[in-house]
Length: 180
Image (cartoon, rainbow, N blue to C red; front, side):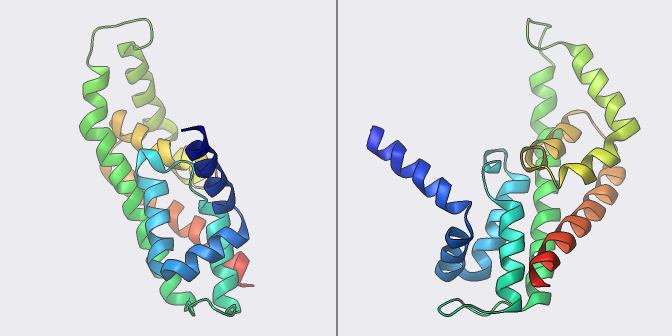
């Protein structure tokens, strides 16, 4: 069993390197990149995935294809990764809205208090938009902030606006940084 854990940890280490990301592109092309961006932003288990470095490396591969890698068109890559990021955050938000409230409906305990949910709701009413946009650039927050916005019952229209704005800013900045 320890050997299995070592293999998993080694795989995760290589996943966060340019070489590991290039190997993923070689193996699965654009669909793997889209899947990783979606999983990192929408599934609570995706927090360990390499979103930022993946976007920069994808931009580099779009600008100058490497031998053995499929050609990635910059505009197709941009649009698909943007869709994956926005849809991923939507899924995280809806998961939070659907399941999160049930978690916090319990009686007050040592770790969970109803006032925490009320404070989170107030925070997302006041500063939720900024937190959605800024969290795009902070790896672990990118995964959990949309979920917590759903738990805190952030207004849906407001979330959608900031989700799309943050997604555009994140994908545009990092993908084009790698491209140029």
